[in-house]
Length: 140
Image (cartoon, rainbow, N blue to C red; front, top):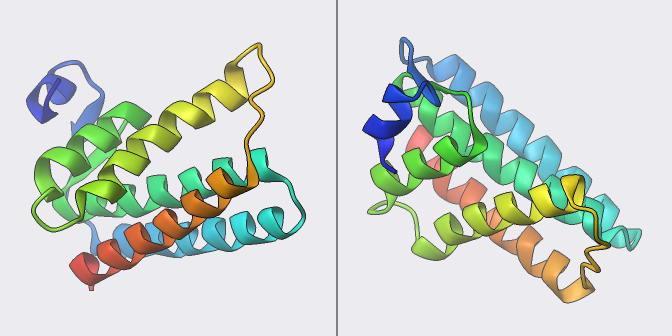
């Protein structure tokens, strides 16, 4: 699936580019990252991963707002960022965005205990920080 497919299926919607919404999304990404760090410190690793993903989601969403798009799907956010920013954002961050999207879904909606480990939560937080910094440079 690509951005055009997402537009055709209504997973992305074209809007007027809005830098203020992009900046607000960056603020939310920063807030979610701070929450993930507190959760990690309190050994709430599942919650820390969900919040790290939320930070990455809002970071990526800032790119959509900047470029004049609105999401109707978490997957479409990944597709958009991967297709339009893979030359500006390291692939490891884009891969983590998609991986955490899937982890979040499994933790929130799955019927199995996910057993998130400390090292995985710590790594996810570090990657969310790097992703946020990469997006901040693009948004400026």
